[in-house]
Length: 138
Picture (cartoon, one colour):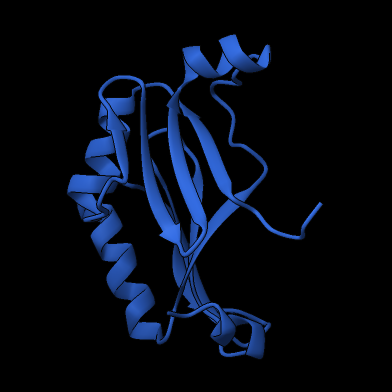
């Protein structure tokens, strides 16, 4: 298997609400939009974020979607500056994101904060001044 990730699929309770948050609130452009079923966003050259109706997720995978818990993972958006982190966190909050953690200077030398999307998926917004952080900037 090649060392790569092609899709990140999140099972969401309300595809329309998630679409409003990501498309209308954050300004992302859908690549595929099937109302009430799935909305997909190209988030990198060969990576897609898919927001899929929880019922369809359960039917296809056979796994139950956990509700009322925070999944033990984060999605991350790296910024070129500390001001960029603050700007993205403000935009997410204006789009309806739940506040999780304000941005602060981290012991590893960066600056980051967190928000949660409508389904509670955590997003880290970070300025990572290290080589790996700089390598993922556009």
